[in-house]
Structures are given as structure tokens and as C-alpha cells.
Image (cartoon, rainbow, N blue to C red; front, side, top):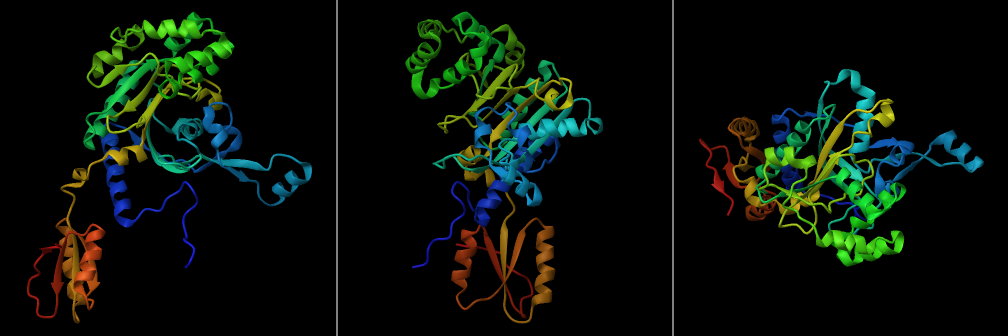
Length: 394
């Protein structure tokens, strides 16, 4: 028996109908964002390794796929015992966006509203729902420090999910300044804020007792954290978030004072999208005002949110594709190719997808194969056909 030939671990092939479904979902998301004034951009898959590992990507930096230097540069590095890599595959779309903005700022609007979609790569340990190559869908607003930007992002993201039939999605919201105030009140030093936030971010995995134990072991503040957790009042929306809640509405937002998000670059409101059909978040983001300035030399306000496309795909119902144009297999018999091309183009003009096929010995086998690949109707065409009849593929 021949050995199976598979893609690299953590990466996937997509069959034609799977690819079509993914493109339809991605198209709905992009259209929703475009209708709200966002402009689509594209950045390279590769970025300078130094930029990807500059301390702004959190734990993802350790998961970056590194690309070795080439030619004489590689030879010199090997001889000198130096760094062998100079590039890396992007592990998210935020770091490339901030570099893109710094590079192209003079050609962009003062307030830049960007759409960016595409694959990213992380050297994860492959497991169910966790891949080494996956698609992200980001929208970001650069140049607007007001609450308008957050409201725009949140309402646009909810509209995209609604367009996919995921109107049960809710966005959890917190603010980094509230987390900093919490850590100060617990007695955690400023130098340890980042480490403490990483511990609190494990709340949904190890529970309050587990987090308290970890904070006690590392910072001697476990009991203070336990007291804080027991006294939480999520009904009182803090002043820092009141504008967002007053506009977007509490039906689609949920204040979560324990929400952290692991990236170190967040400076203001942070978000995480949840859906009852998923055991994990299906998106997230936040404000990262200091990140662009690292490349530009001056700070520029920025905020963004990302949809986890793979998790969204797991939730989308086939009903989302209802109303998509029918797909026709036009089966040819005899010398009718010229006529078939004419009929095909006419059907396409009417909104159909059309595939031409020569009639095989076993028509049913062909139709079964086409049905499995998303084709819904067929018609036969021979030299005596005056008018084709579209019939459903049973």
C-alpha cells in the first residue's frame, strides 16, 4: 500500500466545495466592512525577524517561523556563528499593519480604516482547532483617538457576524487601565504587571483558585485577588467604557473585568468575541496606541479587532449559502461544442455557474460526483436539442 501523501502537520488542503464555502464567508465579511468605509490592503507574508520579535507580539513571538538567510549572507553567518535567520512568516496581521502604515503614511487618509485578510503562521503544536497556518480577518483604525473608533469596530464586527447568521455573538469588553489599577491595588509592582496579567488570563483554564495560587506563589497577592474576585460587580459599567456601552448597547456587549488578552501592546479598551456555539473566543482585539510609534518615531492612535476565521467557519450554517446562484453541469453529446459555449455564456449571464462535460458512459456517476462538489442542476445537449431543460441533480 502506498504511503499517504499529506500536507505538513498543522496545515490543510481544501477541497473545491470547501474552498468555495470559505470564499463566500470571507466575501460576506469583507463586503460588510467595505460598506462601512474600510479599505482593503495587502502586506507580505514575510517581515523582518527583528520586527516580528521586537517584544510587541507577546507569546506569539516564540511561535514565529524563521526563514534562513540566503547565499553568501548565510555562509558568512554560519562561519561567524551569528544569527542564521533574518526574516519570519507573519504570526498575525497587526505587526505587519503597523509597519505598513509607517511605510505608506503619506499616501493614506489622516484616519485610516483598514481591512486585512490572509493567512498567518505559528509554530503551534497541532491539535483540534489549532493550526500552524490559518486565516485572520482584521479591521483597524489608525489615527483616531476617540471612542468613535471603538464603536465603529465593534458595530462593524457584529454586523459581519450577523450577516453570517451568528447574531448570538457577544463581545466581552475591558480596559487595560482598569487592569493596571487592579494590579496596583493588589500590590503587584509595575515591573511585574505583564507577568501578573498572564496569570489572570488563565482564569478560564485554571479557575479563580488556580490563578490565586499562582499569584500567591509569584507575587504573594493570592488572598487579595480572591477577595477582589468575590466582590466583582459586572453591572456597574466603569466610566472608561460607558461611551462604548451607551452606543453599542448592553445586549451585544458584556463588561468583563477579568478580560486580559495576552498581547503586551494593548493600551486601552480590549475586546473578545464569544458565541454560544464555540468553546473558545471567535475574535478579539483592542487599542494599541504605542505600537505604530515604534516604527514611525511618533505615537499614532490605533485600535483593531480580528475575527478568528477558522472558528467562524465552524459555526456558519449551510443556510448562509442559500440563494447563491445555482450551478449547472451541461452534458455534451455529439458535435455541439460551439453551441454549448454559446449556451454556457447565456446561462452565466443569467447568474448561473456552468461546467461543460462530455457525456460519459455512466451519466449517473458523473452527476453524483458533481453533486458532491456543489453542482445543483444539469442539462443534456445534443445536435437535436432546440432548448435545454435544467433538471435538479437528485
